[in-house]
Image 1: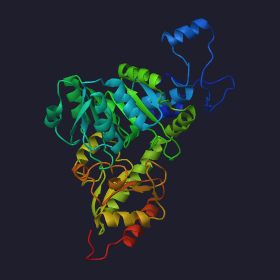
Image 2 (image 1 turned 90 degrees about the vertical axis):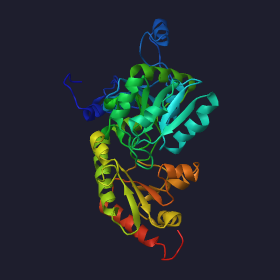
Image 3 (image 1 turned 45 degrees about the vertical axis):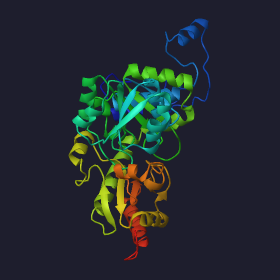
Image 4 (image 1 turned 60 degrees about the vertical axis):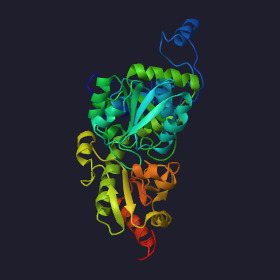
Length: 401
């Protein structure tokens, strides 16, 4: 590769696994569980970590390593590790870095499964968590830190409410207090936001979402500081949340188009947010780069575009939201996001159903909330379908909500 300084988008395309004797242009699949040693000394050196190279696909694989190197280049990270899913990446990171007696400070608005790890799983091993609104100021974040706090864990933008955390403020706080800052960057992707630039130690991705971009496969990754990544690699090698070579191959190919896809996701999403911001059947719209978003100025400072998720609150509450989901025709009703195809879902009854009503309301998940993962279709066709679904689901005047 040229010695010139290249942009991250170029590196995401041009970083490749080593070419074989067949001289292929596209990287092949390495569907093998193990790798042959040249001699006994090489085997010893590899297992002793004196030499780097492929040993066993539970450790790593050329396809997995290519994906990790490309993602690290996009995020500005020193190293990374691939995982079987986004949730494997979250759990693997926390389990590798925390011990009995440790404490985590996390943003209150988290994906449902992330909350379950922090509130149900980790406490079984004596690891406690406290929660702060992502949008809170430095005083509230600092007040939650205890002598046994080891890291801050934050989603920004959050799922599904699109609440933002000030990365610069959190980065400075963690440097001052000697804490690790772990950011879930799933919604923004490294194309729109690079948390390491603001002081994050580690960045986690569910590659299943926008990185794949077509709803085909599962995968996750953690990238960041080399010392902390090494601890996560050791944990992953011993516990086995390995990313399959086939999934890694798909995800690495997808990274080549991530930048241009996020441009279209973001432009479509902004157009939809603006269209429905004054709609008669919609009480509220949330999107990071919509001027009415309470953290619009922060979004402009730390994101290059708003991403592909729009949240609508429909008039009529739960009944209207459920009817709306049943009336869509073009867009899909499924549990994924980040697809080329537009997807709608109802967080209160699906991804965040295990929270109490009080917990949901505290993070802004109301009964009438609809999460829209905006796809790559023509934006006019998406709007037309959402419009007809809203019209068809209209609650007659005088009906209870």
